[in-house]
Length: 149
Ligand SMILES: [Zn+2]
Image (cartoon, rainbow, N blue to C red):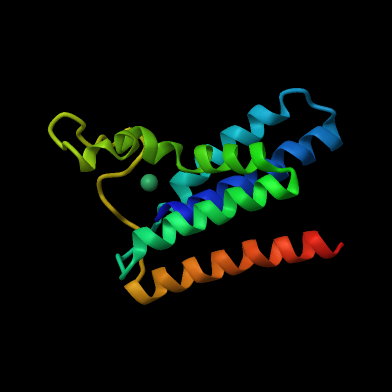
């Protein structure tokens, strides 16, 4: 799946698991637990097999700019930033932080955290784009609610 979905899910898991384990268990390692689940969420979300669509990269960039801006103004910047990095960590490692796109021979794609089989639910371009719109809407709704209440 594309990075905007990994970012949202990674961030939700990071914040919720860290805060729930901290408040219920008083567990000092809760942030590591949250971070581990956040990074692992990538593996599960990757069962959604995306299809490319028009202006896909633009939408991913716009999403992350909006996402981090919201994080900044709501005081959750480091949580949002952490969720973005952790949710995408497996791709950052296996795709060499995107360097593969520049020189695939020097920075080959690895499969430490990805299955080569590519099994999962194959989404059409339209479905992939719609999931991104829904993701965007949820983030914006969150901000509206956060601002009002
Ligand atoms: Zn991946």
